[in-house]
Structure formats: structure tokens, C-alpha cells
Image (cartoon, rainbow, N blue to C red; front, side, top):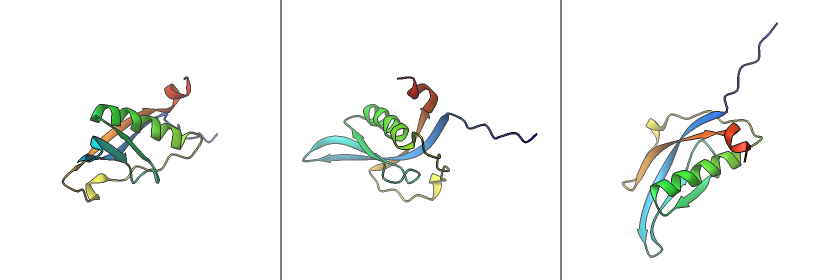
Length: 95
């Protein structure tokens, strides 16, 4: 009997936080090369991280989970940093 691989509901993706101080104020945008088209933002790092959890969960709901890329090869600007975002897809579906 062939066993199916267990699909974890907990996902951890590296994201790119970009900090801005411009005419729109101080804020952070979040993108991820792992999840094409994902862009969100927040006025603080904490808010941006929360929004990133929601964006990842929304974009991957019902979709195959993309493989996690190695962020050590990503080129970052001086105002960018890598932040790992953890999403529990099963927990978020309860709401």
C-alpha cells in the first residue's frame, strides 16, 4: 500500500521587507519571489508581517504550495531585509 506524503499546513516562506520613508510616510512593503504577485504593506514591521500572513494564506488557498527558494541568492537593496513568515493554513481556515 503506497502512502501519500503528508502535506503540512504550516508554511514558512522568506519574504522581502522594503522600508520606505517618502512623501507617503514611513511604511514597509512585503513581497516574495516564492509567491508571484504577492505584495502587501504595513506602517510597522509587525503590521507588515501580519498582512504578509494574510496575503500568503489568501494567495495559496486551494493552490499547490510553491517550493521555498533559497533567499541567500537574492539581491537586496540597502532598505531591504529578509523576514521569514509562518502561516498555519489549517488554523486560518477556521476563521
